[in-house]
Image (tube, rainbow, N blue to C red; front, side, top):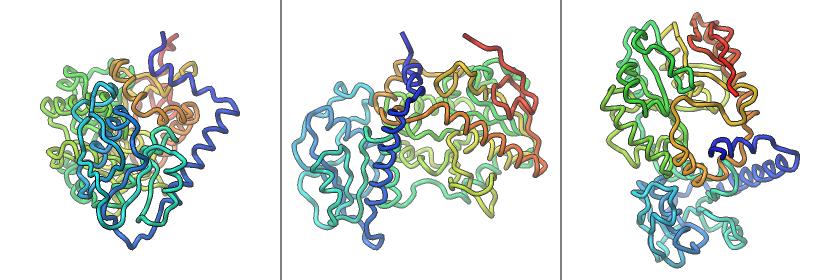
Length: 414
């Protein structure tokens, strides 16, 4: 029996028909984003969701997503049509505590709505093109891999950011590592489990993601910074994301790290856990431009598809001139998912991610993602070296950039 990750990865062998289908969904998604923009001078008086829900499962599913993504938005939530029992058992992939009424109103509020299409139907498409709203977004989880992420775009358009400013975040990072000379970046690949953490004496110690699961290694490594930035695995409503957030709280008790996130997806975290604000550093993402690390003149980092290049390397290079990297194993040629993890959650929790966010995995080309990832790392490290930084690969890795900088070749596995 294949694991959930293997099942998802098996779709990476895309044929021409599959690629055409993905491209069509991508174009529909991009078109709805552009067409959903309305007058930037008007403000929304309420959020309207369309179409009406069909049954208890859909009602519970939508209510859970709204609680997670928009639960702190100070606008009425209008959902026309019938109501059903909110039943966690009908959405077993969702975190049960989020399966509750987000504050639905049954009567249409006065004023102008912002329209959210949670399921595409002929009627909702007609409504989407109606001019009687300040804007519209398609958040249908089945449309395209980025469609559900439109919940975050809605937040940006109707509410102020709820996270610390770049100025505050940079100060918190520098306060945690004053006068640092060295940084150790520990990711979660299989080789991370073989690193002698007791021997790591870097001034700044950064780790990420599922490292929060390993209590013993957290105590040995004592991370200065814990980075995470994935919209569905860390900030979403599924049971996997909830388990991660609970483990993160335990990691805080063990090693007192500063929490490092990017600006793109962090808002739902502070919706659900506002008590984390004082230990959070949020770095603004900005697409394009030169490879860079945050400075007071330009606190942004370049938008990429990985926590390593989004946050861990930029912050390590911001704080220190010598950076050691381990646990970034990459992917051997026979693998067909992203890559193996040394510290992964159970298949049951992985299944909850796939069930909650089907298009997020269905439309992703893992091979193309990995090739781009390797190229980005090499380009970034070359930029750092031209600025006088040194980077050392200290654990086996398949990634060429780290192999060129000291990492050994891993042993191939069947």
